Length: 352
Image (tube, rainbow, N blue to C red; front, side):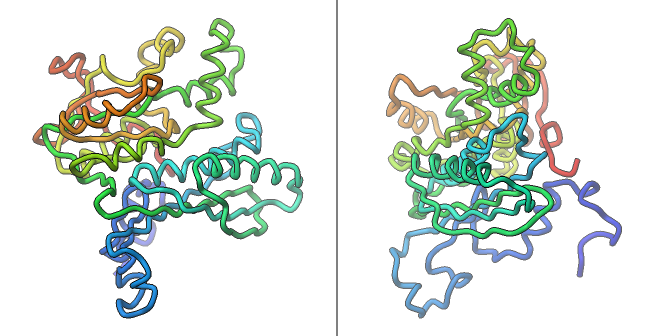
């Protein structure tokens, strides 16, 4: 029986409700967070007595993630040259693999374009895809091409991980600490500078360049995988491509606990508050999105174990703690007054 009434639309339902309804069409034994983690011996993939079921280590999982990028929604000639479109597309998928604890295997690319698209645009797009893939050992291994009135890029990334190393959103426990792998809000600031160059007149060239690079050439945090794989317990986590606030709320909901975030410890880029003002800077940090960092959760000992392995040049922020109950509160200081409650509706939502 179909869900809901026949006149419901995506605008009525929203992105999260739509995704939940679509999950009923997927096998129930598949772990699906930032990517789908599928055991090689899963009956969803093959008969347990078939040859392919015994070709791999029994603890191996295939991790699959797909992102679709549409001209006018995810990129435009005004803000992203074709090389950057390709890089960002690959980076978005590789970030999802990192958020699942999976090492990249390869990328497939679906490309739908108008017939008047110039070859040099396609060539630069694929150069961007390849440059990002090569930087993270993720070659382009296939794809498809078709005609479309709107330029659309669909990338699928394949990864691999032992079951014991998978990162899951539902693994957060009360008492765990949350760490962000880098600053948030830089990509949104870079987008603002690209859309309104005059706004950066009083901003240093160094910050302008850093924020524009953060938007056009994000770095998927696969560099954290060796540290995650040395951990002595399961790690909770996801990537923050839809915003830091969105990631923390989703972790809390998936794990059935609450979270307290400490405003003074959040990962705000240097100079953002002075340039954008405190309110806008906080909004961009929490909900700007497309920073492609990781939000990870674990015990104090586990977080210390992770961060002790970092070189001085890598930034991270221990920014809050999981608690009993539900909801995500933003506190002015550690254990201090509540400033705000965070929710998924405050961030970007398709169809809203």
